[in-house]
Amino acid sequence: PYGTAEGLPVMQLVGADSGAPSLPGRVLTGLTAMRAAFPERTEYLYRAGRGFEIRSERGYPIYLGDAADLDLKLQMLAALERDLDAQRHMPAFIDLSSVEGAYYQ
Image 1 (cartoon, rainbow, N blue to C red):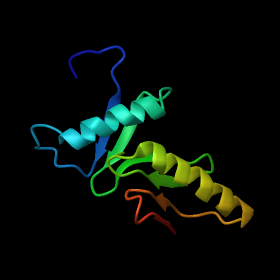
Image 2 (cartoon, rainbow, N blue to C red):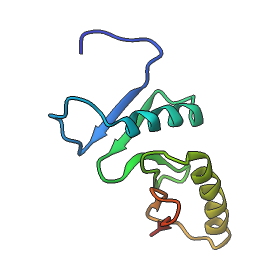
Image 3 (cartoon, rainbow, N blue to C red):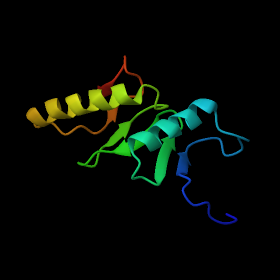
Image 4 (cartoon, rainbow, N blue to C red):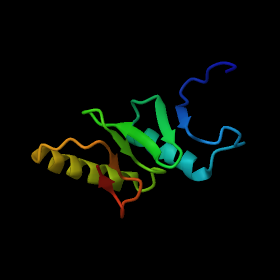
């Protein structure tokens, strides 16, 4: 609110405790991973309970949790989207918050 800081990402926190004095380290580590994976973005969305969120090219949300194992999650996403396209299925969302518990609806 007091000025701009060139080159720093903007993080939109949705549903987070606005009274928290700081962000957990895992969120900041995730932001570093998100910046590396999506360098063209200047703003990143983080939802309490779901973690980082991106939108697919077709418009549905993709939840990436705290962005741990992001490379693996993005590989899983690519394979899953190929399968969904082959089945002509449009999901409401894809949740990759956990690699072991990935799902879509």
